[in-house]
Image (cartoon, rainbow, N blue to C red):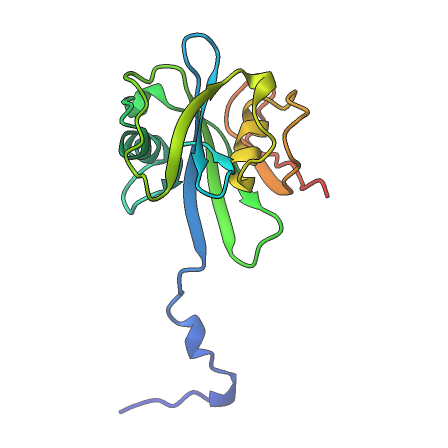
Length: 176
């Protein structure tokens, strides 16, 4: 015997199976032995950090290590990656969740391995980071070094995961 809902007009079959509605990624600040930061210049002239989408079954650290190798030919173990915060972009039609991560243990020489995406990789002193940045990279850099006042403002909800002032129960509301 089949049962019919008492009020079929109230049923919401679109809610029965959740549909994906977010992009999850990681941005990796690669700090060289001299303190400079690695940025890639895209073909439109803007700069970005190594990083990308987190694949199913990966943690943020594994995704950061994989993306770094794929994009730059540099190598780092997932244990050499530290997640600083998780960020949710505040002004987007798509939910974009990005882990801000940093490494100081990358090995090798950066190379352009995806020439259809990146024209060149270049090292910058933190005070000389260009302001023409992709928004997710600017937000990650700000999580790493909030004192860098030349970075463009990117509204986001920031959830610190480590550091001297990290409170795992607190999130930073977006500043608009």
